[in-house]
Image 1: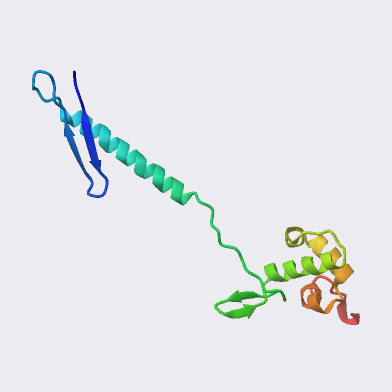
Image 2: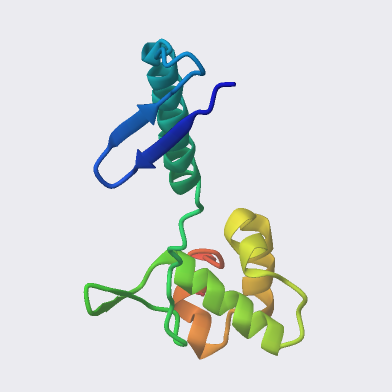
Length: 135
């Protein structure tokens, strides 16, 4: 009867294998070492894939007045301005999402026609409601 005792020391990275047999002969340890190194390398690959496939948790943070803070300075970005436009439109009773405003210029134009005279979104709607010199 063969008993195999394998102790893996993950911190040190060494493998100790002792394989006694009934007639006190040692088995071929190369096969056991090759198997343990394959298992260790598969474990490392699985760990690397698990950590690299995690979704990024970064999200753009916008202030209530439609600005993004970039290196401590408020900056007017289209993303935050469109979020503010969606918020103002919902306060007026429109059923529109921020994503829909960002992805569809016609929706943005329609929302700007509805709430474009509000002081909070005049800057955002200036380019969508351009009527020429007689504005």
